[in-house]
Amino acid sequence: MSGLRASFLAAREALVNGLVRQGFRLVDDRTLLGDLEVHGQTVEHEIVLPDDFPIEKPVVRTPGGEGGLSWHRERDGAFCLWSDEEASHLPWASAEAVVERIEEWHRQDALGWPDDPPDLDLERYWPRSGALVIHGSLDELVGRECMVSRGQNGTYQLSRGRASRKQKRIRTWGAVVVDVGELERPLHTLDNLLDRLEDDTAHRLRSDIESGACKIVMVQYSRQGHSASLGLHVRSRQPLELEAATTAHADEATLRLRAGFDAEVLAEKRIVILGVGAVGSFLADLLARSGCTKFTLADPDKVRPGNCVRHLATLADVGRPKVDAVADRLTALGVDTGDIERHLERVTSAELIERLFEESDLVIDATGNGPATALVMTASRVLQRPALSVCLQRGGTVARLDRSPLNEGEEYAAATPPGGPAAQAREGGCGEPISPTPPWACAAAAALAAAMATDVLSGRCQYPPSLLQVLVGADVLPDVGTLR
Image 1: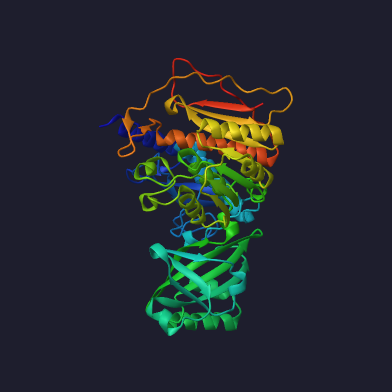
Image 2: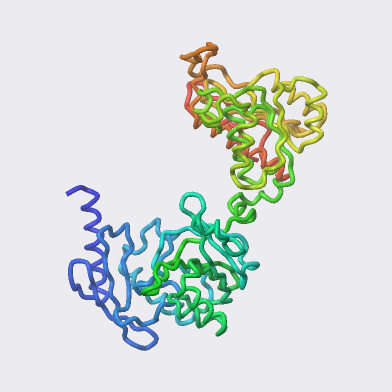
């Protein structure tokens, strides 16, 4: 027996012994039964230990079904005692913790979970279909003719209107959207749903389902003022069976929910990125995902096959200008990045760099080219406009980032000592030496630049003028900047 399996069995034995001391009795090698007092009454509880305990939680239910299918309860009657966020320390390994959480569950259930973060997942109370329904705002679809059609990767797309004959030939079905308002208890049957609707609406919905006119039912509901939706897929009409489909909102606001707390500020800023190679392409991607919508991308180079290992571009982009490849990838994110200006020429003139500074909120040099860096940083200092310069040094073992112009009393970190691994290969055809920098180092430098760019654009200005991140240890290490 492996050491890990032995530790699992030891944890199981410890919990069983602890529950026996709490008054439970062992029915078989994985099931215990015991009585607990609930609201002045004795209620029997069943605790089943899964094969992968303690990684998997114990399954707790009342064999008599006390409590009904309320919130925080699965379809099979099992209690939802711990969220995944609470699971890292396996709190259910203690018998005392299990019994205490069961008793707390009953207390909260009797009160209707008044202090509970809204439990908006109604899918757990229905059989699962595996389908994913993509939709926009449901408010404008309630009570209107709707349809659902096959989308990409097996998804279903909900839209307003009735399917035409041509659309029906490409797998399009009818759909119904209803609003049941604030829920005190979860819906877990079609009858539960129909009881929440006005008689005419309920009769029409049942008729549409039974006749085959409705394939998807979208239920809009709320709990404690938070809105959500449940998608029901009509699996069978005889017998009548509905399954829960996963639903996902697809509007711009939803796509921006994970962009971060600075997304609203970043959306109003224009960012110039000079050099959209290995570091610059990843940087553009990170900033777009973080809320930036206005870019000026400048790079004279085209995508080569070897670039794709350390670049946002793919082999399908080979031969295209790098700015076009990156711009298309940003647009493909599905968020608003429609304002992208592209420059295919090398930026060397004073007139052009001055215009770029005047028309933007931040200029970022990601060229890794000495003259280009000097142009950007000099222009920033003279014009008193913000700029960043990011590069990888010492063969990709150190990421360096400098901000301009300096504030009073600031100074840059000392020059990074030379060294690091040297190029060991040359590009076939052109014969250029290939930097040994690994792709993850490019991503790390881009992340560092995205963090400082956000710091500047948000107005926090907490970063020092130089940041040096040692990615691979070396004999001689540069001073590393830290937050003030």
